[in-house]
Length: 303
Image (tube, rainbow, N blue to C red; front, side):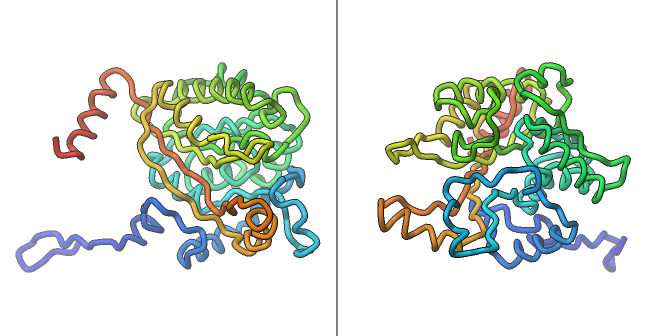
């Protein structure tokens, strides 16, 4: 411990970068220099989240003829994972993910000292995730992936989790399988009903006063109008025991592909080209915890 001339401890003030990696502003820029530098470090682990998934992203179809090496499978950003875990999950906390998908969220969590539990519908995806995790992490530090329907599997999990982090299907924007339980194959009305049931059960597995972070984006109906999936997500959470706490806009990488999409999206149909996702943070409140939470908000508001 360093002290000054009077014996008082010298407190060194960390920079925003040292404390948070990137500033926790409402815009998270995946194209910034600090972000890209962090991403390069994560890529050194050789995480291949696209393995085990089909090439089926609708808004990327057709880019291959312009960009032969383009991979049209969505890959989750490991830097975004790291930020959510470090900012909103207690050290060594337990993480639940009801829409696991690829390997990134699980590998990043356990690499950083957290304990991840994910639920994924498809056997081939989980097999790939487990294989990658064994290549990157110690045998005794493996994420746990369950195979099957989250609505059913969540019933058997103990309510002990410190943080929930997930990225659900954006309705039918990506079609992952032809399984009956797959949300991406349903009508929007049926999709929302099952989606809400899974969210409700995931919230029930969180400890009180803990956060639930979800990455969502808007999708359009067959006529080209937005369905307001982001708005529906907020309504589902706020009527089921959580409060709306933070909202980040994650500015995606891949602006080159966005430039190609301008011709089809805006020039032809006047639809803007989406280059962001919404990262929404909710906080679970209950009993005495709710009163503490409301007091916290009042103090912040100065009332």
